[in-house]
Figure 1: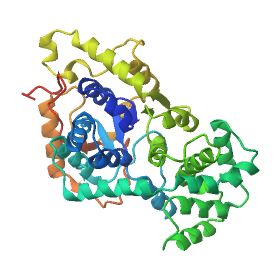
Figure 2: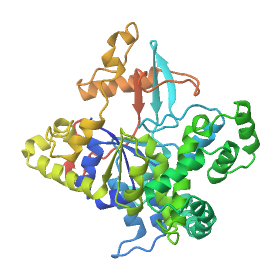
Figure 3: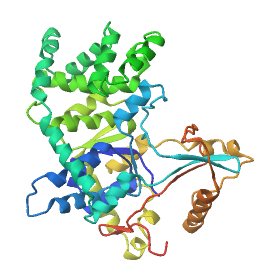
Figure 4: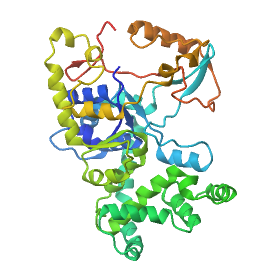
Amino acid sequence: MAQGPILIFDKSTLQALNPDEANWLDNFFVSNITPLFYIETLADLEKEVRKGKTPEQVVGEIAYKSPDMQAHPNIHHLTLIWGELMGKGEIKMVGFPILGGGQPVTLGGATGVIYKQSPEAEALNRWQHGEFLEVERGMAKRWRQELASIDLQTMAASFKGIHEQAGKPHELTDIKTLADSIIDGPDQEAVLRLGLELTIGYGDWGEQIMARWNYSGRTRIRDYAPYLTYVLTVDLFFYLAMAASQIGSLRSSNKADIAYLYYLPFCMVFTSRDNLLVRSTPLFLRSDQSFVHGDDLKADLKKLDLHYDALPDEQKKKGVYSFAAYPPDDDSFLVTRLWKKHMRPPSISQQHPSKYEGKTLCVPPAGSDPKEVIKALDDFEKNAVPLSPETPIAMDEAAVVQFTRFIRQKKGKWVRVPENK
């Protein structure tokens, strides 16, 4: 399996790819699939479709091109904020997806995590075949109704005063600076209350959250709740940019588009063709992240497709993973440059083999026969003893991290895994 940098894409990027290009996206990147992507895709069921296609066909085409081999669904941002504020654990914003549903296990002194296929991934499998549950149709309808009900003009007007008091900054860079300054202002209680109002709501938990913050010594919000701070910064930037007429307030879907940035901390590479995200994303990137325009990514995936298509047919029949475990060692490929920038050094078990001495590592090392690996993983799942769901196991400390998923044997014209495997 290729592995690769962790990527977040929006629907605009995936829609632009053909199935062959989508194959290479899944081969060379580990995709963090945001909840917004599922919701946006499903919402197409409620859209009027041009060019004679039914909504089911449009959704099915997107689902077909969606990564399945190397894709992980991120936990919803509101769930993460609630957990952070309730002291459930630190939200690590270091370029990796935040996953849910894993079962910690142990076997022979070694620990691991087993992830079953997520409901979202199961839904994508069904959508590829035009199978939609009534509950999903209802979700799609509600999503479009919610978008239609968003009054961005009122929100823009409510931030006009703040924008004017700050000297009417016009450039998006200056507006981002203003958002940061608001969060670092002297009234940190007001900042926390604003954060609650714009994200999870005050609700029944509001007073408990405020009490926890007071008990902490009224710590600066940026230090107390870093992920809430980040999401609040995105929201403040968005509303202030509307107040400055730098982002339109008439297009309700702008709110859904900017929400992709809520998940930016959980990837290494972010790609989009949407103008709002093309303009805004660079302002929120860490130094160890990259933004790639969706058109540039598509062009490079097409170039890779032509590169591999020149291989002999006999070699291609062996499957993509037999000849494209790594991108070409050629910096003219954008994907190669992204790999060189973002791929991490060897795992902790490779750097420190003695770490697991005396423990039973149930899975053969990389390079082993695939059938041997599959059997070892099946045996591990069958014999491992479940631990408490609250047991903390860092991904780089686990002896085994196992994901269950259903993948297509072919995507586009490409054989991914030979039938005899």
